[in-house]
Image (cartoon, each protein chain N blue to C red):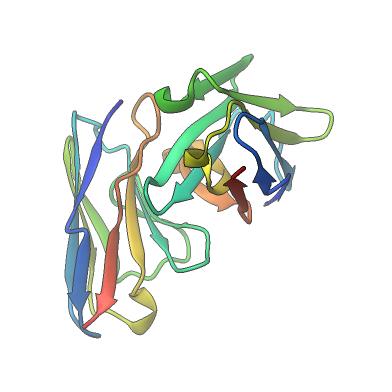
Length: 122
Length: 107
């Protein structure tokens, strides 16, 4: 299983971050996984942002800290999951990761994307 | 949200030592606790899930214990490649929050 991230790394305040995570070797529709987005910065450490998973229908969970600004969307036709985070501020500067949370591993994240370094600056 | 608190934040040890890292949850999380290792410039690597189950390929010198609110990661007979940062994470309910990390450094 591999996760390949893509998306821009430099944005301005108030813009929207859009990242995609292409999944190979598993299915975004798997009923045995969740597909999460996490970010990491020196000031905030590892911060789980949200995730999506399919259990007869699609579910989304979001962190309270970003709930008003975040959308995570599965794309079954491309077998990928996307992150949108709007109204960016410099505090959103971080490395962003997608990851698979595997149900059999207590939703431990056993596969990670390579990370995307995102800088928010005017 | 459930808050996860790790201690210590920094730990200095020598090759061959045994070290313990503690993770405390702000409410009971049963055994929904995972541990990760992260080296500089790398993605986190899942070491232990469900509090005490070793992920495939992880050396047996790593072990985890605990349930409810208090959990321990133990690394026995430290090897040079074990010097890294360790994170706990709860997956019991709601946002799957991480601890702030413990940086394990060579003494």
